[in-house]
Length: 391
Ligand code: GLU
Image (tube, rainbow, N blue to C red; front, side, top):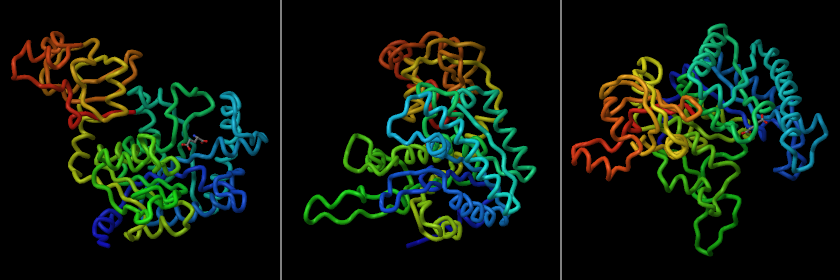
């Protein structure tokens, strides 16, 4: 298998975000792979050594670690399947300190300092707080401290949660402009078919690990288990969506088994392990960075819930139909901020209309815009390629 892309990626790695899933730092009941019994400090020790090696190559590491609820369940003795929301939040609060204590202890033995950052979607949706988080992480890295990030589970309820740390780690990778996101979980990558399902038809080929994905197409999304098929591999949907998000930012994502102790080392050596989501267009990265961080927005566009969903969950462009109101005085090509109806920043992008034209067409369907402007118009208010989504 050609490993030139892997070699190219790993040769000069300067900043990486590593997501550690609950399943790879937990005890398991022997023989029952899915039953998580609580935090396993030995696994944290293992990662402290792995991460020390990466840091020693001169690469900065940001960790996104799950495991608070898992660790808290054990501490509070709440091992039954269904927990109420306050119970889960209590587990997260108790487990988070337990988790950080393990990281502190094990990383210190390797001479590594760590710091905790808890984020919520409100932090990431608000431009000021988003930048604050970014500045804090940059300052920690400058002082050779490894930020360990988790969602602030004990104060966020389900409706406003980021929800899973795959998504959070993708957002963090974009936030810190990482060169690579590594997601460590109990699966060793994306398969051509769910490996846990026995072969259905007699002649069906065994599932194969897909080593590289250059574009998250509908077919790839289907492999991750969307559309309720048989291919769901524990939480693969959020992993593929996370990869899609980083790729749209020009950042590759590598899915690796965290249960294979040598997988990360091999991967960082350029060996072909796991699944690499490789963005073909690396140029996007600089451009998106420029849109997100350099340009000063000339206006604010408020969008409705449907448009927000299209932008955040479906990777779409912004169309006139989703625009609710407009503030500011902008021209074609200016940068604008896109907010939801609660004034949370959803995206930034380069606008295809000036203020007065957008006032005329806000809320309109494409057919209505065509009637107004004839054939010479932009279907998108902001094209996806000219937009950075912050969620
Ligand atoms: N934030 C959750 C925890 O620490 C985990 C979420 C996830 O694993 O995706 O327990």
